[in-house]
Image (cartoon, protein in one colour):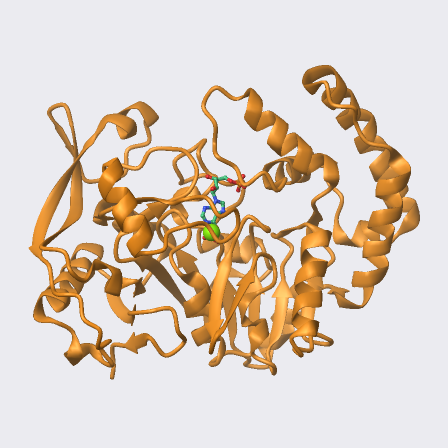
Length: 424
Ligand code: IMO
Ligand code: MG
């Protein structure tokens, strides 16, 4: 079975944990979009692994992990993650496959990302890792791909061309001194040599695997409301985070995808700027942030927190063709008297049941809430569905009804076995 897994809020839903669990059942795990702006956390025993580029399934020693053509790769970050794994005794030889078509993040992408942000009136809150400028170059047809850093002549040509333009922009617009050709050329040729044995035609590998009846898990990064088309533009990332992105970013046809699973937190969080209809007021957000340890895995920034937004997530179910949902961190909601879920938005005299596209409207709507009774905080974690407090069960049923999707997994803590499967 070929499964696509996507986050259905603004990222940080807990995808890493579900990917780690589902990885046991598949043969291949593939990242298909985004870059090291992602931060996927997997806890194994006492050890916490945070992956930014490496598919989270790499911890399963017999699985093949691919970084697809839709990903943008910062070679320095990838190298660090590869070294970290090797130092932990996890072999990646013959298991890590990197698409030769994936674009490479260059030093000028990182700097441009950060400098552009300083000039914006409405800041995006980018991670500053060069993701946007790298995808912009890909679309402008001047990007540098993994295949290009394997070839000294091609790299020299492309880098010279790029530096001519980028240095002019950096100097004239941003008063930055620009970049010299030689150090970057040497550094990236070295990366090319290091990665050469991992680089291949991953579309071919994956399609051959499908022909051989192998199972693939497509690991989404970010969340649907950070999608370049369907997110809260311009407060989004620069890739297609929807399930459709899995096909574009790997070269696997849509007809080969069997199922799409959505991951959502039992409440909502967001890092960076942009509208957030159900956001808590400052004091409560602070309380929730501490309770849920809501600090970014990539940048360490405090996450904004709010109630579950069923209008948003219902739209995500539609956009992705989701049939199953994993609800994460339900334990964090324990101990509240009342819990709210947003079911619609009110704007002046209109009632919205669809996600509005007008930023001005979105920034001034008032959420319409359904309120449910909370449940006590407990030290005994539920081991299966029947162990949940009746009010927690009622909350989960309400989410499933509002989203029109089956809840198949519920997470009650960060450890691997703190996950409840609903058929238990
Ligand atoms: P995972 O995979 C949460 C947010 C950034 C910023 C916006 C644009 O861990 O869920 P970018 O660097 O992409 O130009 O930043 O998107 N963002 C994320 N927020 N989790 C992520 O990934 C994110 N990746 C990007 O905070 O608001
Ligand atoms: Mg994150």
